[in-house]
Length: 131
Image: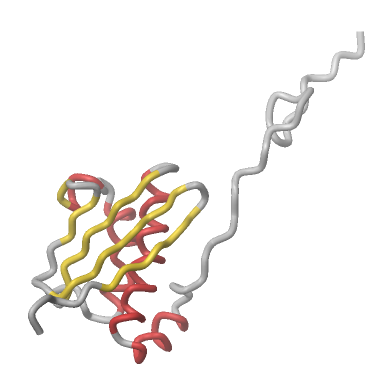
């Protein structure tokens, strides 16, 4: 095998989109050209993003390159998680059952509710004044 195999997948969460390339390696994770720990600063974001790799015990088997855009860091972490899970299935179809059982293959379709005209927010109303 002259060139190594790269597994690519896309994940979405709210308005964030993450494109992931997985290739056999030593466990190096790069997000938008930055080290993983610098980009995702909170432990919650880090755990969320790498949950599929931890669950399948593939942290040290693959190098992960993530290109995330849109939304906030929490949404990008969720999008990265879905993309990594999809890429892992491309690498080994036997992992599908364990990822599906934990709900890591389901796209979270919840979106922010739009602001309505004549109101200060999506649900909030202006204060009622009797007089």
